[in-house]
Image (cartoon, rainbow, N blue to C red; front, top):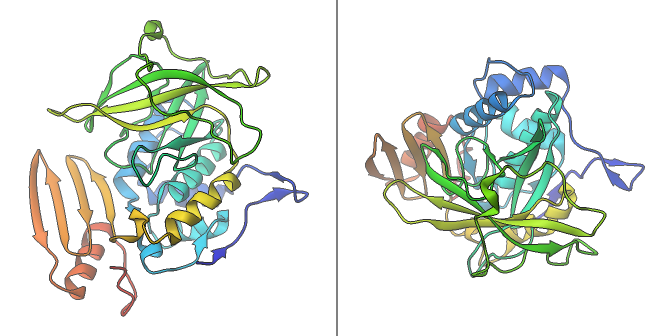
Length: 318
């Protein structure tokens, strides 16, 4: 697996946060069907993420097709906006961060661990922190059903609900600031996790000088279901380049779930649509419709009809 492009750096050392030109911002907003207020407010942030999730799918098609990883701003912009594709969390959230910065938001990138035998390492997932008016909001356009449809406050103990279900953040043992990107920065979930914390919003700052970072767990409870851990994270600001080794692992490792089956999925106003190599699942109004995918023609037809993606003949990523 080759890597196409590289992170933007300042004098070859420090990573420069990505921002978009005005014409790129306009095209990106058109891509997600957003024509509302663009002032950097919580309401705008929530509306932008919702629009993004309704119009830009999660997709691992490039990984399944063994295409080069695209890690530069121009390449990701062309893929998601120009080609009207989707991507995985590293792609979706890093480009969404660029849009937010270009609209005047301050954005930080956070590392999260996903529970499970094949995960549970730093940089399993990339999510965003957006400080606004002294409060810290979490934004995430790349995790799927286990994450929030609209950004939520970093407010331990508070149940925050949307169409996907109820979300609750628990603060856990404070993590020690690592000496390098390879050191652990979120400890294993334990019974010590708490959701008390007086249920007040967390400040949009961290105790960086003291060398510690608050650590949290995000729990998701679907309607009528039981709560489960989506991921653990800290509020230590990260550079996008730190995610590339884990990103590469998911794209190349034989046991990677991203390589086991193609997946394209996005939210709809009343449900969700997902497509794998052998089935199309449409959820609307609490009802599910399962359609078997018989051949390549049926797959390509579903990909085009429901996600607006045209895949080259003979390159079926399944």
